[in-house]
Length: 441
Figure 1 (tube, rainbow, N blue to C red):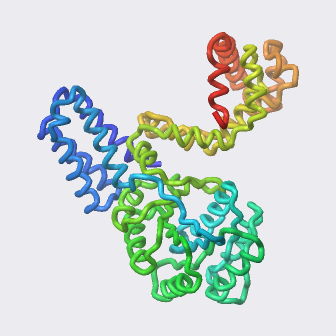
Figure 2: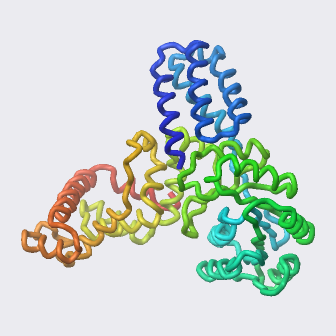
Figure 3: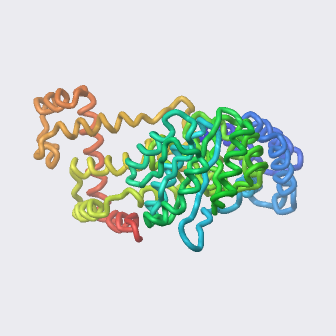
């Protein structure tokens, strides 16, 4: 997410931090570089111009010129202005005072609209809501089938009536939700490959008939400035409440995410960061600014880990750590917890400084699978007492896992180092640290 943009900005910041004194000239030079970086990332020209002016105005103020660490203070100003540009604070869904809350989802075909409906239903279900999906895209082949399949995966009912018009289906949705004791209705409307009058009239009619409490516009972040232009056109006709940006995990330059909120003056509410149904994140401007500037996003990482951690296993492991015990079974449990958090590259991207890694370095999730295969090829006794694994056993483990003896040796060596570290830390504060990482602490 934003790797290229982050790397280029980090280069500018490095020069700034190296300045012993900040002057109008070196601020102007830095702003020229940042302007070029933002335009290369496909940020809207007017948005870039205003952003640079706002930063420059603050950066040549007395506060910076007299600061002991002027370079760092300018970076802080850039962060503050980026947060402001992205929306300042998290904006949630507008829920109705009396259920059901009606959420209408609009956007072009191919933007990930139908998948988002499934993700949103899953997200709301996880928050204790009882959503219902409504298949009002009656034009795209298999759109109804796709929504029904998503509903089945997350065990959420889907209102789908083949042969009816989108408006007839939407009309029936609220009564159907009340009858099924559902407190949120998510209506998936039809999209086209490009904006046309027929599509816009239909979504306007649905809006007028069902009077949604929330209209979300879904946009593919990989389409760059086209995404911003489409968002503006939809906003002029629908006056939607929020934006959903999909495919932020893909090869996106990031310009659309930075520009879109400023152009339509509506908040980004969610971002899609993967294909799985749990790959949906609420949008936090401060956290996103932190990621863009290479500062990581530890808060989201902690939230993600707390949402996936198995408390019983964590307590069992804590007990073992307190005694200085760490087995291959514990290691295997930890591998599973990490894998539940999502793609490894995405998880590590939330750590500060990861943008400084060489651009061609990729974190391969398959490596975790290889380690798991090696551990699973061990006997129970070998997992508990790896010191008994001799040459013959290593050969058997390699054969059983489909990996080389060298890879088995590497895993055993790394595990030995981990065991030594655990025994050392067990005498200190590791158990207390583990307790502090559990949900509710």
